[in-house]
Image 1 (tube, rainbow, N blue to C red):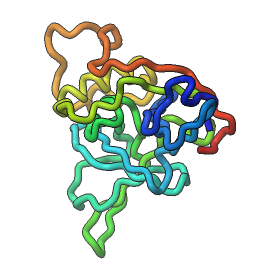
Image 2: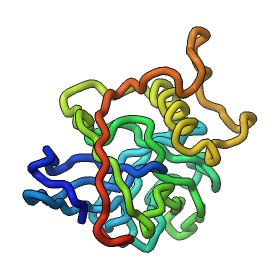
Image 3: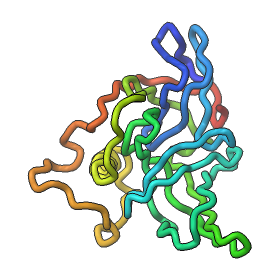
Image 4: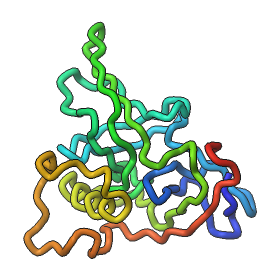
Length: 206
């Protein structure tokens, strides 16, 4: 539960982030408080993109046991432990390029020829206190960004929010930035959002 509600303009479906990454979305709005579903909730699914190679998949909640799960991927899917996952912008709910998690486990299900992948959320969902609500982020009906543009925006946001999770330069296999691009963090993100602070009433609780 957060201490912002309809009097503050909060709406159902509104994306919520922390200073380290995506937290979840608003699912119920009262006058002065709102309830947030965390991305680790078993009923939550989030379109994401692998920063290293721009693969797009869905990250599902795992019952708030901390890690997210990427299921039913082909055995040859090129996702590795340590890969950084960011929002892809598909679906229009979450803006592109915000950090979601870092891959913590990659296991092959030999019986079904699937790769089961787990990722640790960057937001530290069990230790939440201050959150940001994003306005202007729900862009249903607009064209999503191409993977290379998401890659550029993600790098800018990661440099601002949490540069410690960026992979080494030798592992950055995504498309290069344009020649006239300014220094990371100095250009405005392609998706304009207006953050507002909120605090969680209980740490680690949705």
